[in-house]
Length: 99
Image 1 (cartoon, rainbow, N blue to C red):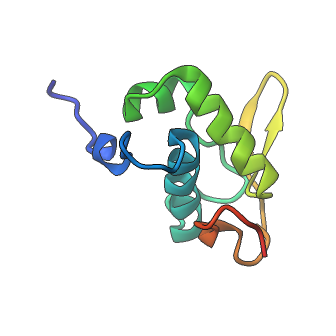
Image 2 (tube, rainbow, N blue to C red):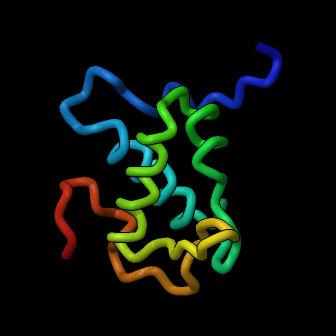
């Protein structure tokens, strides 16, 4: 395990909040902080699943959540990309509701 990135601890499987929402929140924070730049791809579902120790379906649901929040767009055959200007407050949506 020489390649541990550390994000695995960011998700809490014992939490009442679903894992896909937790993962979406982590990615949303990376978008907000600039770690994931506008008009650039986010990691693939396979990469997210491996990096965070979740099932690929969980990573897919997280991407769906991010699309619903207006933070990413998915282009068939190319992947998912950070939108140029995310909606105000969308990345801060921890309560499960949008402003």
